[in-house]
Image 1 (spheres, rainbow, N blue to C red):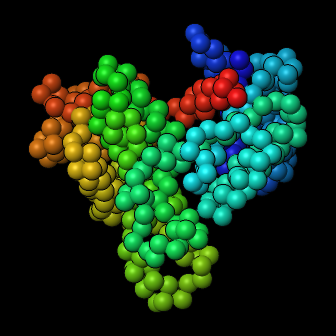
Image 2 (image 1 turned 90 degrees about the vertical axis):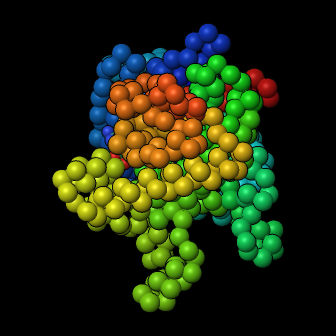
Image 3 (image 1 turned 90 degrees about the horizontal axis):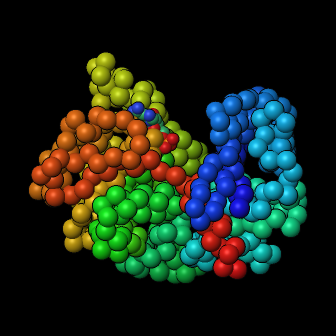
Length: 401
Ligand code: AMP
């Protein structure tokens, strides 16, 4: 079965075309459209055999971007299919599923209504996801679509972990609670860890650390997410490239008062000008932070230290929440690539049974164990693959519906 996965952001769309069968999972082509609706819009496409092409164009909206994607998938020189009908299903990443969507769903008219209701919870993310779905429905009539939610894996959080200490009525009235994000990634790497250990996930206590430009951790106890660092929005928890992560709401009120900020300005401050870039003044990119730190920049060192400390702190918190931890997984651009960060996070965690082997930690690429022989806890680096989860979920949901 050929399945197209789409991850629609406000000005970009990432796509992959898979063949998914019981005995085969293959990426036929992948790519991204960037700068949708702006000058310099571009499609970058790569075929399974390494053929790469960039196409510049006037890509005014998400509909036009999907036309470009379909055209390149069909093109004589760079394509992988002969007609649109070969695409049997489309799997869409949807950021926020609220309390309604606890798993992936086939997209039907009543589902669209519920998706529109979730916009209020994720005004920065869900509208783009919905635009992608609507454009596909228009262009690929009769092709079944499935929505796969970033929040769904965390629907198992107990109430005492998802509630904030606000008047209860605000939860009831506006759905103000922790939902958590990066669910497909936490799900994927936790399951891969189980395969690597050779033990069912239902018998494991795993902490997954998805550390990228956006960063979150999850406590996966016997296969279920029981706590996670992101909250009602992807702003809470760990320090991120440009986001604050945890902050005292009182500090925010103080800043609003002193700087006389509007709602929009405070949003930009917390989401775009904070985190690694805000602390370091150097960059939101961890590679550049590390380079600057090694060149002696003390603010870069500070940003790095705050980032690592929060990961370590939540690791301890999640071990306490689960009554122990037997497996720790690093994923995401930073988690997969920064041996410096992994070493710093694990420093002094021998009391939890976590010991990293310095040499194994420096090996690059692929799935690998980096714990020492005497470590009681398995420590893995596992490249995430959210698109594969979306494609598999799409196949599963359509087979069941
Ligand atoms: P993601 O959002 O998952 O694509 O991750 C992006 C982040 O990964 C950026 O902060 C990058 O600087 C970081 N990253 C990628 N490669 C490395 C590396 N070799 N060392 C440190 N950070 C890296």
